[in-house]
Length: 511
Image (tube, rainbow, N blue to C red; front, side, top):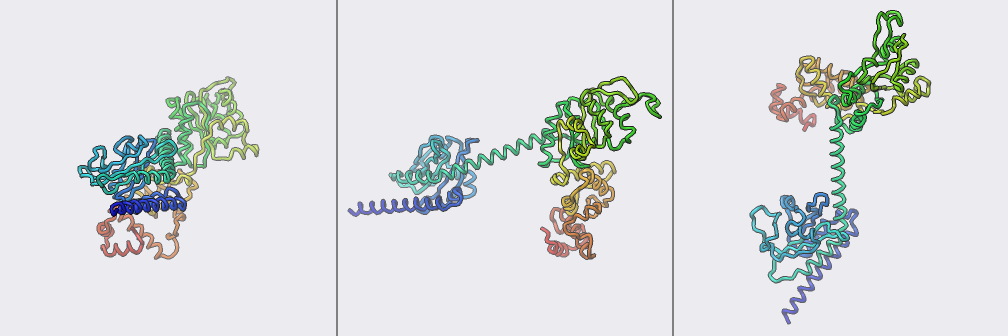
């Protein structure tokens, strides 16, 4: 009788713990604003009410067929790292693969138990292992497992039942996690493909890895293989000629000539002659026949920069050559043909020029077959330091200098400035700085006055002490960077004591 009474009490206590566990798990799921955030508290409740040593929830990554740890109780960080399986591998892998629960009364006696969380060669503890599938509909999406004290001849039916109920309760959270992981993987894969696409199409003559330049590189790759007319739009100084060169040298015409014409730089009286050539005696000074740029570009590409500056007369002749590939030299009657690809560029609002009668509508549509917009430098700030380093290297070679880097305050000024002159202005600033630098570092004070005005804290004007503090801070930062944060070495370099260096670091809040 006493034995029967003790057994009833034990069963009653176990049932009471099971009910308390299920009630707490249901409450956690009902009250959780994020279902995924309730998983760990549910495992903690399992740990408390069922007296388990360890509990884990693993999730199947359908894309890689790898089973990864989602949440665990009773595992160290190192053990968490080792808890990963393939489908069919070990007990957990078998449960996820078959969708059937598995009970191991003693993991120390079970050869299929891989004991992955323990260091290699270490004997598994005397524990029982219960693992049940986490299912969504007919699909197994993970596994819930628990380890508890080993007892010879014990039944684990109640453990399987309780874990299966919990697995059903948290299946939604696992499904959300699975979708989240797959979504992250898709996003990562998409970003990787975008980077590959940008790298594939990014011409060697163009510096820049910013997101804003990605579409430009892609469009260059799309149009280069054709003979389509390209219209490059963008502010002055953005590098439109480099885009035109990239289109030409990536095309089947790369072995042919690349002829540049700045339509704004040529006098109105000479532009027709430059473009189409002239016959001897066509005008005063025409002492011999001269081929034009379109003839010289035959078999290659002609780049018409500042196309919006052309006069109405030249626009008519250009329209004809785009439509018919035919023209006559100035003063001539013979109709000539040319095999040339046209790439044009402008910083003007051609649509406004059309409305005001300065630019022909039909010519605009002939030019605007494949437009490429080049973003201004202020919209691609992540490229600024790359471009600056490129120009430093370029002008080091040209002027025999050995500048190695920009100081941190100089970089801050470059990033704060709005760059109305775009890449051309940056190149000019870097050439000037390389020429006047008195060491192997370009300091902020060497940058043009227009950039000094971009300083977030205007320490180059105002009280003398403020300006001296700014210069001192800049020198200390450069010395610390040069010596990789070694204060003693930086202090020796500046000719001050280590104590003074420590005071200055504290004064300026440097890390």
